[in-house]
Image (tube, rainbow, N blue to C red; front, side, top):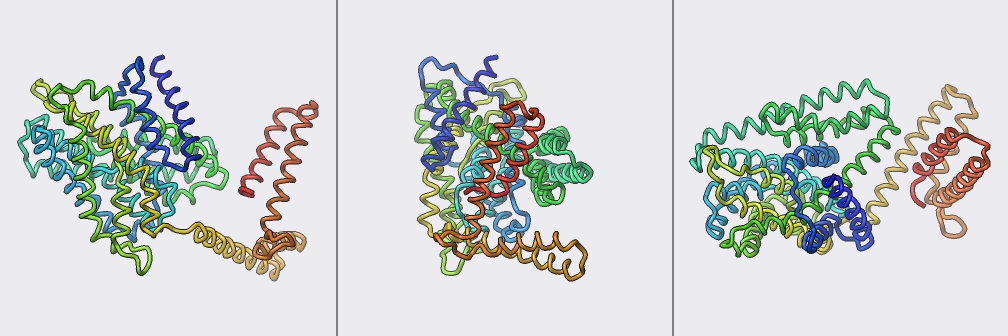
Length: 515
């Protein structure tokens, strides 16, 4: 009951924080971390202990799957070279740099220092996607940031498993062939399992037209990919990412508009709740972890700052030469893109979940030295990146000069809408010439498409015909809604009829868009 109360409190806290975040136009994850930290510092608040397997199994699969589905495979092909180099080379470089720095400034044993390096090497796709939704980045830059966060996360967690195995089983003795073989087994095996799950789900969804079944399948898919991969002793994270990318590519062909609307609504709620809870947990965990530190580790704040600085420096060194391949337009220097890509490399729940999963003891039964300090340093770096980088990322994007103007997006959407309407109008005129449809039907559709193409003609009060049409349709729908409720309140229709007609009116209003 206590756990249920905590979850309900976190959801309520997240809802309030998200409301203020939208009003203040700041990233919700950053505010959630600060809110969680503030609540944890209130006297009398009980300590929060979340089992790492809960985060790894319950929270991460749907969040990773949702991020992977948003990734365009078409755009990924344009930036696969820099993404590959960042997802592998940058992860190994970051892990090595953090490991050597940790040995020098924290006194951690070398094996645990490189476990810390593997943990902090990953940028968090959950945090990056949540922060990136509100930024108007050029297409290639957005894909680079999102794809790199997804794939380097999978790489770093595979590296983390290898590092933990070395620290626990052999006490730090490194066997490069064995470590390399385990890395390939975890990553390659996870990719195979993810592709197999995607293929199976594709076959099932091709034969499914029920929205409820489609929703259940969509919710179960990431968990199935994760559990099957982990059961096969491969990487569950890699499996989820691969399955999400492959299914996201063909999702529009597997369902109709009605099912897509429902899936989008359901996943929006799931992602909001899980993101809100998990970012709040990051803030709530830090005070408790600091309390468990040995007395001689009082320099951890400065050590965390040093590790964060090393991570940023390594990202700059790697991204500067690579971003020439993804320049958004001519005349833009690559350092502008490099600055955005570097500052977008926030850490989040993925490193925290990995650090919490570090075993308490080695295989021989002895206590694993340095584990409490690794947890604190990981959480501190996560809080630093989410708060400092998260709150300032929009400013960095705006000052870089690569952000797209709102007019650019509006113009692109208008041009695409016109192209779709012209294609439809050509098809209708072709049917009219063949006399394949009744003339009244042809005329009705023709007039509707012609009216949409006249959206650029100004009305007498300066508004466009298209805007005036939408305004009138909204007014008509408001009248119909009022009449529907009047009929129901007057006991002239049943609740079943009211719900059915209300759903039809809601769909029409959703199709019109905002006023």
